[in-house]
Amino acid sequence: MNESDLGRVVDACEQLTDAVEKHSAAISERVSTVSQSILNNLSGDRDVTFYVDVNGSNANSGSSTEPFQTLLHALNIIPAGKSATIKLSRSQKHVVDGNVNCYASKVIIVPDSKNIDQSKSIDIDETTPEIIFLSGSVFFYGNLLLGYFKQSLVINAKFDKYGGISFWGGGAVIIARSKVIVDLESAEQGVFGGDLNYLLPTKIGLREVEFELLNGYLSLNGTSVLANTLWGVNYINELVNEPTVQNTITNIPYAPE
Image (cartoon, rainbow, N blue to C red; front, side, top):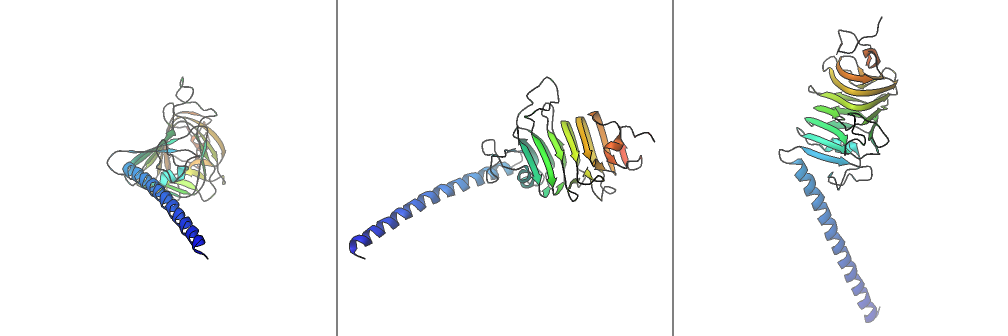
């Protein structure tokens, strides 16, 4: 290699070094910005708010301009003891297909904007966000609110026979102004509750909920279900597997014997 060739090699190496340093600085700045944004959201006494959009990234901060990609990630990242609001992008299906251990004191899941038709408190249309529970053991250690006034959701429970949602430490679920589809793998299965319902009864509140019951139940027995305005359900026996006055507290009528 002559002196001229050696000079070109040195120049090329210097250019490559400059390019790497330039991109390295940009990457470091990006990581620092996202990390600080997440830290700011998780620290302090205020509640946290996360946004979820299927076109986002779980490497994002979860802000409105940098949404997470999955609801599963948003639920698992909430710090213990916090109250969290998770806002889902409209016209999208948000899939939960893995385990969740959520230690938040309260989780509210709603659309990122109010219903298109605001003339009524519940409205389901093609833009309503849909939560699809496919698999996984989903544990909440606090309370869960799904839907709100003029902020409707579609909750589509399609758990396999090993999946379901359970509450520990006295947690409860309220479903409001939304549609619930129950289409579980097993006809004896419940969306909510588990083998320890007799120790920790599942507490369910329903306010203006439309049901489509295809397979399985909303809950196993060992529960309380209090409701105000339901569609698609006439008796508690349709929502709870083998309910009795001893194992189920409810204001919904029992099916005639």
